[in-house]
View 1 (cartoon, rainbow, N blue to C red):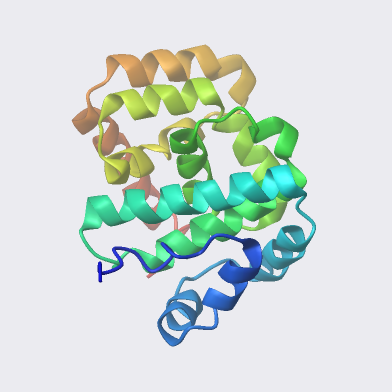
View 2: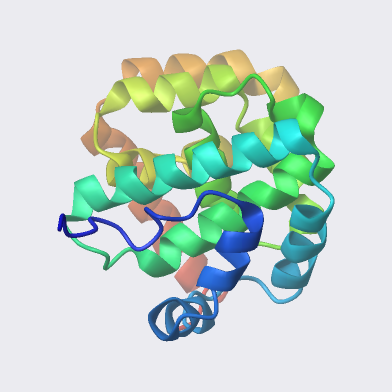
Length: 200
């Protein structure tokens, strides 16, 4: 018998996904996932109200996340991140479907990855910043999901009016090296520590 490669490989419906969350391993990872307080309840509510089209997209995206992160890590050590992303996708599909329905799975993966650490009340704002053009620029910088996810901080840095500066941000990402962008993020984190905005 072929060994399962991922812990969600045999899930093919929302009901099966919810049942899977009761497995000892999956439930433990969910409890450790640091999903934002309140988002889990909202995600379950939205999952229960998805129509057939949205449910199919949810399941297809779930498998994409499951296999993509497995391929990068080589095991299920990313289970906590997977669960946060998948649950966040249910909120987007339920609340903001018209805004994200044309996103590719890679674009949607990055959007949900960034959003998953924050309140779902901010999801509409994140979608407005991490639009398809910005995400395509980030995806083009490096093939690694982990580098792409780190670079998601760039569009949010010191930009007071995002809409007026969108072309500048795209140009800046396109003309900077990955190292230069990482240096910017590192410097931003250092400044936040100095201001007391980030504490360990």
